[in-house]
Image 1 (cartoon, rainbow, N blue to C red):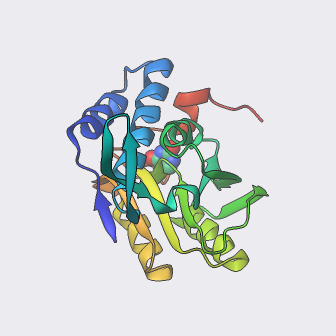
Image 2 (cartoon, rainbow, N blue to C red):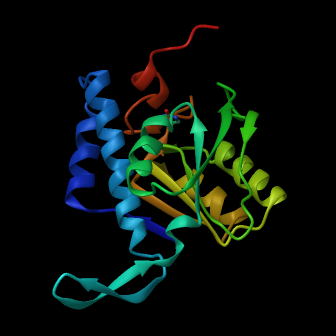
Length: 211
Ligand code: URA
């Protein structure tokens, strides 16, 4: 399932963070806001039950979102840090995991994973946050690793921008995955960046690393 999150606030934030002249502070805060809005949108898909509440003056009917405490958010380091900051504003009771993953700089963009710290994912709603779904190689390895460990109730991916090759790869290998994204962009360049995209998320958020 591919869900384009087309809420006007999400799309306005996406437009702002695509601007090549944006500064680091506004770039990060745009991503934080998109994370918060993604989580807000996703909450509508969770199971609810009816409850009643005693007000000072009577009894009112209301709801409880059943799975709110059954969520695990996985942050793909380092680019997902601000996205997960936004998500955590909504999923306050969730558990959090981290995966340090990156891809080689040249084709075939082989994915590498090193630091993996995940809570128990069995029967949980697992949301993997990574701002860009380009070739899909890294995300595919992460989803393999999650399924090798446990059997989540739902497996969800939050990407700000996606490209067709990445989407195809994920659905080919993990057809049950739900992808939430703001935009499916045109293509990848030969370095594996999404075009028009927004550049290198990690570098814009945190600076270019030196080895
Ligand atoms: N990662 C990024 O940060 N940007 C892209 O365009 C693709 C992967």
